[in-house]
Amino acid sequence: MEIAPGYEKKSLKAGEITQHETQNRSAATMRLQTETFTSEKKAMAAQQESQIMRATTGLINQEKHTSSTHQNITYSRHNTGLTSVIASQHYNSQSNGQIATVKMIEDEKARISFEDLENLSATSTQHEVEMVKAKYTEQLATAVKNIKSAKGDQCRKIPTILNSMNLMVRKAWEVPTHGHELGSALCNALRTNGGLDFLLTSTNNVEQQFASAKLLEQCLTSENRDYVVSNGLEMVVTSACICTKNSNSVEHSRVGTGILEHLFKHSEQTCGEVIKLGGLDSVLFECRKNDVETLRHCASALANLSLYGGADNHVQMIMKKVPMWLFPLAFHHDDNIKYYACLAIAALVANKEIEAAVIKSGTLDLVEPFITSHDPSKFANSNQAHAHGQSKHWLERLVPVLSSKREEARNLAAFHFRMEAGIKKQQGKEGIFREIGAIEPLKKVASCPNAIASKFAAEALRLIGEEIPHKLSQQVPLWSTEDVSEWVKQINFVEYADNFKESRVDGDLLLQLTEENLNKDIGINNGIKIKRFMRELQNLKKITDYSSRDTNNINSFLTAIGHEFSIYTYSMLNAGVDKDTLRCLLDEQLIKECGITNSIHRYRILNAIRGKRPLNKMIPKTTK
Image (cartoon, rainbow, N blue to C red):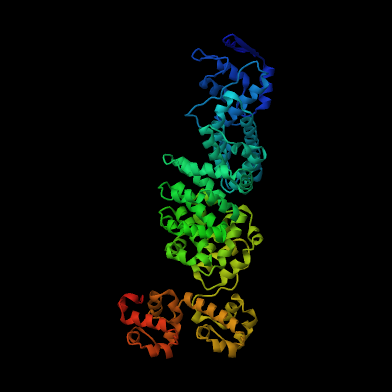
């Protein structure tokens, strides 16, 4: 190469081939790629004594290339990754075969920069966000076009391009507040420009297979999941399972479990197909690993399957002992693994058909300690996986858990909706809760006498600008007649609320009501309705705080026998039972004075009083 300072004309000689270029030609090239490539400078940098030039490859010295890029860059000083690849390929398309393909420069030490993405923050204006979105959407579309048209030696660079695209999408998701918008835009661009079709195309190139899997794992948004399920589910699941079987690669495990995590939040039918193809087995196998990110994917995958799977797939989960696998995950030191394991078990226990098997695992007992020791707002920002919140469809699946009969499930669902309320408020998407029908269930939970769930539900309603209903205390003995009337309405006995008011039933009387009282005094003539009311009353007794009356911790003694025995606490307190008289109780006294008609329950209470366990261990000391 001959270079004359001040001259605009230059020539590139490689062997017997000489290519002359002018300023006009380089300008034409710049119009095709305006990011980081300037063809005339690139040609000038190509001729060095230390460089080996081949007519078939047109290899360029890397140092000079980087220097040229710095001199001619439009808006990024160090971008030598994806845009460089695109630029060189545009140059080839305009050369009319006069010079061979310019090979992309590879520098393992070079660091791809996405400064404009990294500079965005929660305070960035919408205009700034739109500018960045437009820029990278166009870049990604161009990259897709070029990998689809790559031929011959160009195909060797496809994995590098895919990895650069993967990094771009990752950076987009990481942007605070606006990450969901940016990431979704890039994922849509990938699909609409044929990128998903390319990723779903089979290839024998192992490096390209894995690069495709990595990019796919980052791009499985709701719309892209629909596309994959319709056009290549079996291939994607098989690839994910193969990744998890690569025991020597942590990165392969992360990608494989990440893909399965996304596929488990599509539909009940898709969940069933993924299970048949070995997806659930692969996730459970990965639960044995120690890598935190892999285990996060596993816990989230099981939570998604619990929410989306439906009754039939829940049975499959029980058969494969998923509740048992969830126990070590819920006991993990990482909060995110722990949380999604708890969420999975809470969603499963809401299914009455498998409730017994879920409870048997012991995992459910780990739910309450987690939510009582964490703040929803802080937890929302603790990990990128849920920093942008869940989708509308995912949240819609969680709504029924708010109405679960299990207190642990309601508590965790309320915790999550409180967390989502903060995220959606920041995104300006508060209306999503009304769209999915979550407002009324949240109001019902907010007004219930469940201290934990009601607190989180009330906070969620406040954040999204909804009215907070009348709050009922857990200290039922102190309820007013208005409190009782409100509770009667909550359990769907609205037509009898006025009857309770007229009879002036307060909390003390409510806890003493019998079926005869309901029939003769309240006017509930239907026997089935009476049984329904008594069932709700028994559930209320189980969660009641008796501390205002129970100075001897009789309730603690009864719940130590079994949670259901707490329904006898108030009748025993009214009968005058304390620590001293408890030791001397007879079966006849339990029937007449305490109203315990169930002979099996009486036997167990007497056995606890006089039997194997000392009373001083069953009844904790009263805190002074």
